[in-house]
Length: 190
Image (cartoon, rainbow, N blue to C red; front, side, top):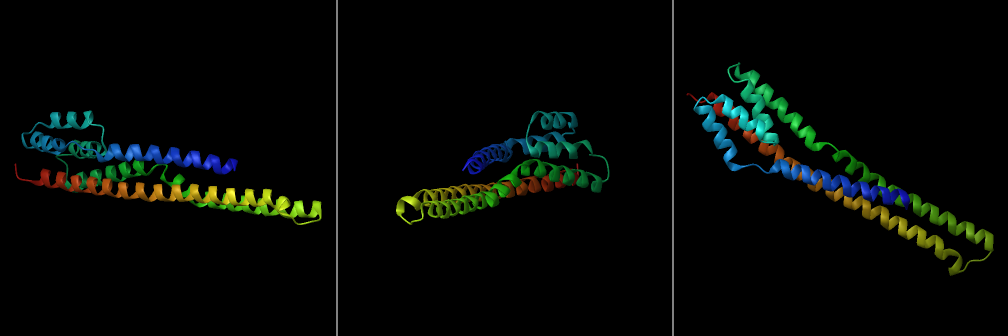
């Protein structure tokens, strides 16, 4: 039960930590893109750069990379924006694999507890030389508790992993949409 308990604490920690990080990344001021657009169309590059630096979101960091490269060939700007987008998604995915690992390991740890309980049952039967409910109850209890605990932790980690992945997909889409809008913006005639 101790390894399952540790896995449960880790699953809760990683789920909450990633939820908070991804939730912060999803929040964007609706005026942000309009302000960037206004600054760029009015030729206020320094204001646009300052706004991006002072806004701590993946979209701001993505646009900062692109704005710094305005004036260079469009392919270079697109490449920089795409690279920054991949980096931002990678940062958001950090620690997600631990939830997937916990979702796979926890039920196996419960199964190890099940085997341990069965071994305990057979050992008690061999020592006592008779079969009674008192002899097998401890092993059955261990078997059922570890199985249930392992499954519950695994299910929790599995659900959290997939919910966080769907949230991450939405952030990824949002980043892509803003990157496309930015590239369109810098290609507009002045």
